[in-house]
Image (cartoon, helix red, strand yellow):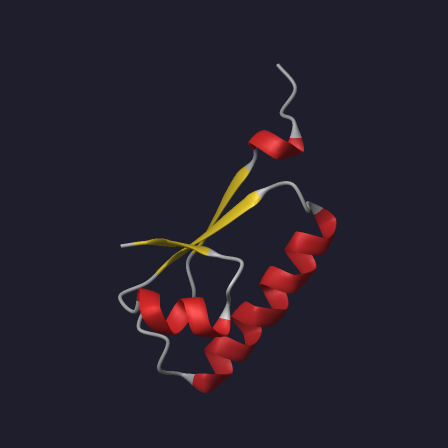
Length: 65
C-alpha cells in the first residue's frame, strides 16, 4: 500500500520538550521548515510540555503532550 503525502503524519522528538533551549528550538524550526518544504501536505507533530511556546515559535506544528 502506497502512502500518500496528505495522509502522512510526522512526529518529531526535539532535544528538549519544554522549548527552553534556544539552540534546540532553532534546530527544530529549521527541521520543520525543511520537512514542510519536502512534504507540504503532511502534518507535523512535536512532543512538548510547552504547547503555548511551541505554537509561538513553530506555528505550523501540532503538539503531542
